[in-house]
Amino acid sequence: MIAFLAVGLTPGCRNEVPEDPTAQFGTLIHGDWTLSRAFRNESETKVLDGTYFRFREEQQMETNLPLPGQSPGIALTASYTLQRDSLIMHAPGTGDQLFRIQQLDSQELILSTSILQQAFRFDLRREAQ
Image (cartoon, rainbow, N blue to C red; front, side):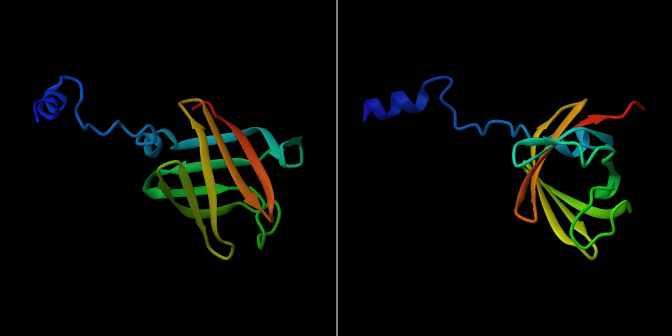
């Protein structure tokens, strides 16, 4: 009984929940991002050069990333939801597209996703304001 109380009263042994490192993604993601490198199935590809993502307030976004069911070269406007390290794009006509946020800071955004059973990674840089 005494050992149980000693463990429960030891300083620094609180049941605090660590801060979620993804909690700031909602504000950090806002802005214009341009593709610096793209990978398809772990091999670098230049096919997507010129791709951009623009994230706005009220969880609205625009991208020219070609997705199934979308005309190539046409910008797509969609809403999005952030859930921890995931970004879910809700695109009319193409359905939801899930992106994993692998890294996000003030200058770099790395997203991964699967399109037509192909694994993609997008390394993006924030455009100068």
